[in-house]
Each structure stands twice: as structure tokens, then as C-alpha cells.
Image (cartoon, rainbow, N blue to C red; front, side):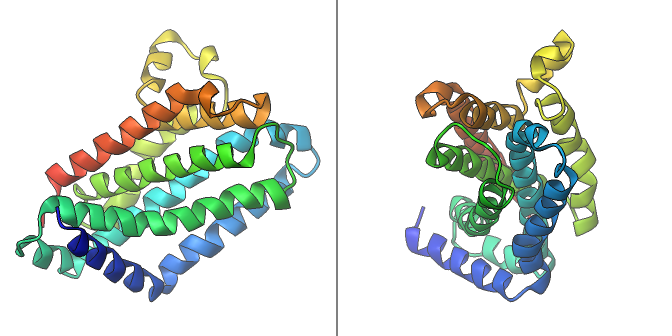
Length: 242
């Protein structure tokens, strides 16, 4: 793995995304619009918003990051850029790390918009430290980036990336404690929830924001999210193709 090659790939992709108005709207505008609608919807029931906020934050980070990463990676293939990289001496690990770093740069910005807008603009109540919340949200973003790249290796166009949303994201919303606690699900579905990354992000962030836990109190959730991130980036590296 060559650091300079990885950095060069990342810089090129970051520059390219900054020149794309659709991507910029997805990064900066879409989260603000969606979270504003959330705030307006719960305006008369702030206590309910305080409860669902951790789940909504994690869900929107996963959703927006997955979409941005998947579509951006598909454009690289459509433009032939990925093909050219794969024919050079640059290793697949360099290529994948370069893409992941560049996409994470924007996921970092987007995730912070969602988190801090929810905390300071929607003015929700929370018990834990902001730094602890930040760690969980960023880990969720890293998982979403690597998942987006991995899934996009199987898609041929942007529409197919969108088609993966009901398959990958909808089950996580219903089974990861977003709508109801995982403990209330049937045993079979509880077992399914254990292999969904959103479950651990929601559990971790909810423990921090509602129960006031610190990072040592959610070490299992943190470790699991790191494992998911590593698994997805390895799978993406192995399956990347022209």
C-alpha cells in the first residue's frame, strides 16, 4: 500500500465532488431540510423528539452517506476513471482506501450537520457528552461509507444503487430499535437485528443521549461498529471490478 497514491486518489475525488452541484446539495442542503422537517413534525411533542432523536440521527447518517457514497462511486465507474486505475500498478487496497477516505471526508461534514443541527437548533435534551455522541455518529458514517462502496460494486448504474435502499436500509429501520426497542421484537427478529450495524449505533447513541453513558459503557457497540467497517471495506476491496 502506497500512502502517496492513496492521497492522490482521495484529493482527485474530493475535488470532483466539490464541482458537482448535486453532490453538494446532498451533503449540505438535504440534511438541513430533512432535520428541519423533523423539528417541525415534533414541535408539539418535544419529549418524543428527545427519545427518537438518537435513532433518527443514526438513520439519516446511514441513509445520506450510503446514497452519496454509492452514487459517487458509480459515477467513477461510468466515467471510466475506475477502469483506468485498475489497469495501473496501483493496488486495489490503495484504490479502495483512497475512495473511502474521500467519501468519509464528506460523510464527516454531513454527519456533523445532522448531529449538531439536532442538538443546537432543534434544542433536544441530552445527558451524555457531545464528544461521545460525535464518536458514535462518526463510526456510523464510516460503516455507511464502506457499505456504500461495497454495495455499489454490484450495481451497474445509479438507479440500481437506489434499488438497494429498500433491501438494506428499510429492514434496519424496522429491526434496529428505531421504531420500537429491539427487546420488543420476536426472538427471530432480535437475532436478525444483531447483524445490522444500525442496531449498535442506535443503542450506543441512545445510551449516551438518554442514559448519560460514557464510551466505556458502550464499548461493545463501538467495537462492533469498527468490525462492521473493517468487514465492509475488505469485502469492497475483494469485489471491486471495472
